[in-house]
Amino acid sequence: MAPDSKTITTLLLDWRNGNTVSGDHLATILYNELRLLAGHYLRGERPNHTLQPTALVHELYLKLFGSSAPAWQDRAHFFAVAAQTLRRILVDHARSHYAEKRGADQVRVSLTAAEGWAVDRNEDLLAVEDALQQLAALQPRAAQVVELRFFAGLTEQEIAEVLDVSAITVKRDWKFARAWLLSTLHPRS
Image (cartoon, rainbow, N blue to C red; front, side, top):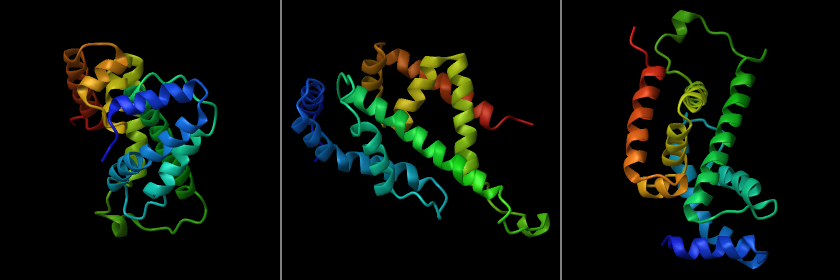
């Protein structure tokens, strides 16, 4: 059973105020929730993905808990930071894998032999990352809504709390961002 928001918020505030036991307890109780989130994202990746949910959570753990306690405000803020960090880890991993593919150790395949192959998920993730960066330049809050909803799994109400806007504004930003991303990632010919 996932811990409630109030418990997490209390632990975050205690940890921020120097209680390292609260930080340790927080890491323990959030591990399963973060692992489920990581598993959710990796299910959409290519079948031979080298990053497993456990490894992804461990890398996320090192980035989130490896330094001094950040000034997290509540559960929603924590998951917003976790989402952004998770996105960076996945994009960095995709870029690294994509760079390796461009190396000299590749097996050469003719275009006719490659016909019908699916697009590499790393390329998809990099395209989404580029599109999100473009969206952030155009509508920063809409890009944050996508990040918080997709990478952190936050509800519209939680996103509204994190961004200090109404839930209706979040819905409007989500609708705009979805349409914009769809038109950017899949332009009509």
